[in-house]
Image 1 (cartoon, chains in turn yellow, green):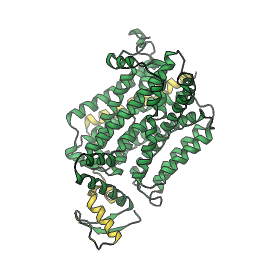
Image 2 (cartoon, one colour):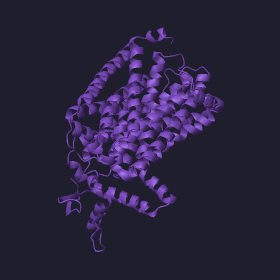
Image 3 (cartoon, one colour):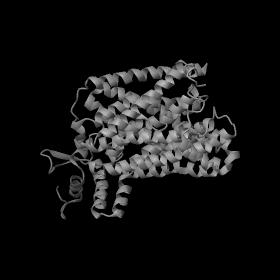
Image 4 (cartoon, rainbow over the protein chains, first blue to last red):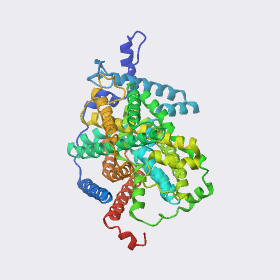
Length: 71
Length: 461
């Protein structure tokens, strides 16, 4: 790790503080590097689609319940 | 990107590194953590806990929000304590299982939940998650202002003044432009959630009945039916909701926790869940007085619960109850609107941190404040069926949880992302159980709505 030195200017001292305390992937600039894409596999896709259908169906049930409750 | 766009050669990379204000602020926080860690001993651990706790307590007390407290109040008033006290504690155990994963994911990847889903699985799935979050957060924000308006209404504050005062407080917390200060201000307000505990003591609960409720855990009152299942789902939705995943992961990243701090992150989560569970149980104990006195609470709002309780626990107790509702709504306003803004920034690749000065984080702060302001405006529409809206919003939160949990489950089991922090088998078993339980509860609720006589044929009412 880079260490701050006594003759550093305040800005440089802050830069050194950042580099000595933050991990590389904690820097705001590091967030620009995208996480590599991953293909979802069979069981994962089945679970995601199954729960998506479940959510849409259940939202329809809630709307139906609200409608019947209002009438 | 930042106003400090100095480039320098980092010792750990060949390319120049851009340092921003956000990095400098976070580095100051981390320097205090490193200093505390270097000292050793018990005082050092307590100091570390003070420095590293925050997101877990905030997310748990934040989820003890307006609709949640109204759900707990309705639970006590309609059903008493028999089944629901242990059930509510169980829902907080579920919350710990779920939120623990977000701490590990944040520390291992240093990425927010929304950006991980978008980048790892692509925008198709990312937009599904974002739409779920955005709709859920906005509906929940409306209910927070309902609680604030109703709670302050107990003191005769007009709705427009209640809404404006809460927006002003939200704006004040944001204008610190510093995650640490924002977190401490919000934590101080969140501590007000514990006010329900002394109110419960004022209600003089029968402690032997409370103990018996936990030991015996009576079956559902009246068996399974639509009303009971609505409250069951509302109580689950009062504890585990999608915004909590997005908020705690993003806040943990913003705070700067690393893999070495995960143990403290877990402690933070358990501490928050314990405090929130104690508050939830206390609320049920208070409104159980209404159940014992046979008072119907079907259409109560926060202020009306307080009015109904006044003859039973006195003016002071009722006033504290109303204030507790205001606090619950206020903290959630802050945390949920922040969760929306984090997610927006992550998806739109815009700077997203509470350490950002206004000049660098215009989009982040605009989304945060605009969400809250729009929800506040809707609450001022006269004639809204407020309590029904509150219960339905909690139900929707439960229904949206299993799809959100599947993304989390896949991410924490992604060896490439997590490395040594990958989920152990026991965590996967617990998480799978939570997904199955939430999905099952939703299906039972659906059956109770579509085929109301189904449970009667099985012996329910």
